[in-house]
Amino acid sequence: MRPHNKQSGISLIEMMISLAILAIGLLALAATQSRAMMMNQSAYFRSVAADLAADLSDRIRANRTPFLTSDDLAITPLKPPNFDDTACPHTTVGDEITCGNQPADRMKYRAAKELTEWGRLLKNTLPGAGYTITSVSNPNPPPTPDSLGLRTYTVTITWIDDRSQKNPIDGTYTTTIDS
Image (cartoon, rainbow, N blue to C red; front, top):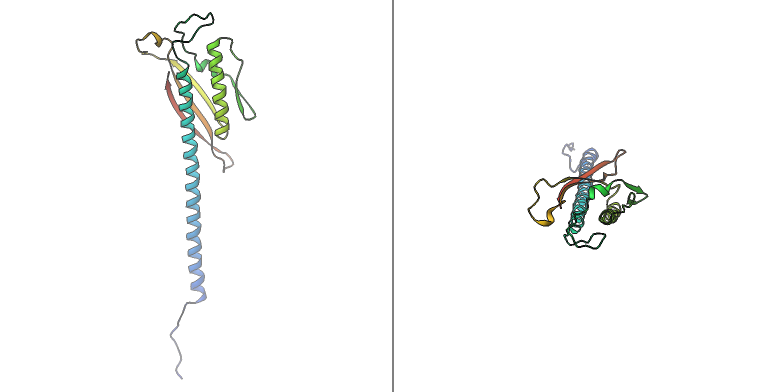
């Protein structure tokens, strides 16, 4: 009888190595999928912040009409309300953002009401949301009668972008609004 030296099939060690390589590949694929989903959530939050900033800019521009009436009902081109002036101090109570003391001036009251509604929408839409509004007078207003008091606002919206870490990373969106 002749000894049989030729091996046929695969050995157990070769099978274990190929399974280990396959498992590492599948773990890498799962990690890639998880990271893609996290980036997709981050992009979603950023698009929501951009949409909310556009909503605020519409609210600011809607309050600049020259046909607003003053307290004595005289139709005059009033200056639009300064949203920066009424935005602070805003407070967060639970899940609700509320503007501070409601101003007596009708235009400031309207701006404070708009900011309260917008702040509530912001808080309900983005996790851990907050905002700041700063303004400067428009240095080159167009030469029209209703251009008095136009302002340029810088709105910064912040939210918790990555909640999976011990110290969450904040997302930030900043835009400029010309009223």
